[in-house]
Structure formats: C-alpha cells, structure tokens
Image 1 (tube, rainbow, N blue to C red):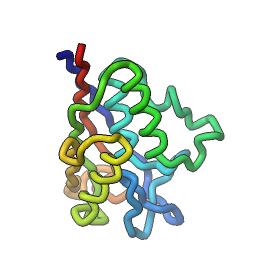
Image 2: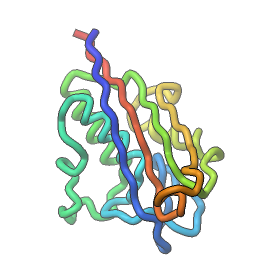
Image 3: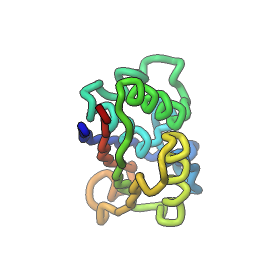
Image 4: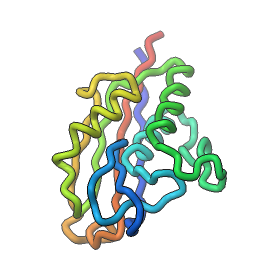
Length: 160
C-alpha cells in the first residue's frame, strides 16, 4: 500500500453581507467570508491538502479567482471535482484532519453537520474526517475577528 500526506491552509476576511459557510454548512453569524467563491476556508484547505499530497498544485490552478465561472461557486462542488481527480489518479482518502481558527461564532454545535456534509460529497465515512475548532486567543487577524482560517491534513492511500 502506498500513502501520501498533504497539508492545506486558507484564510479569508470576515465582512458584512455575506453568508458564513464552513465545511459546506451555513452558520448563523453577523458576517461571512469574502472571496471569489463562497470562501469556505475549511473546504479550501481540504482541497489544497488533497492536491498537495499528489503534487497536483493548489486550488488556484484548477479554480482561479480570475475566472468568472467560479464566482460564487459552491466549494462542495469544487471539492467533488478535486476528489474525482484524486480517484482518477488511483488514490482515495484514508482520512482528513482539520482545524478551523475563529474567535466567533462558536463552531462546536456545527461540527457534526460539517463532517456529514464533507463525508457525503467525498463518499467516505464521517469518522474519516476530523474537524476541530479553536480560537487564536485574540491574537493576530483571526484573534481580532478580521477573518477565519483553516488548516487541513489529508492522508491518501493507493492500493497497487
């Protein structure tokens, strides 16, 4: 069995007038994330981790923010495409582990919904996806509530 590990990171600015979407779940909040697509930092970090594990570049290569067709795109749909690319290359997800960094809102009540949304799109068990939430203890841009960041690690498996 061959394995590959990739990591991903994303951060977006919080702004009024946008929905807050994390892991494909819309979370009630007074601000949302600014971006060309739906700015789902958790899903973007996962995609980058998956692509990085196979040295396939990053999401900007496949879904450039300069391309109008990706304006407002549902990141779960983009994740589905990245997963298909991974499968076509002969690999599958062993597991994902992620961390979302946000002072507010509290994410614990939404973690299971995020895991379910992600596992449904990826066609894997929800116990193959770890989603953790933490604060930045009021330090840096996430601590000042200027944005939300996410980190992800993907373990991919290839059965010869």
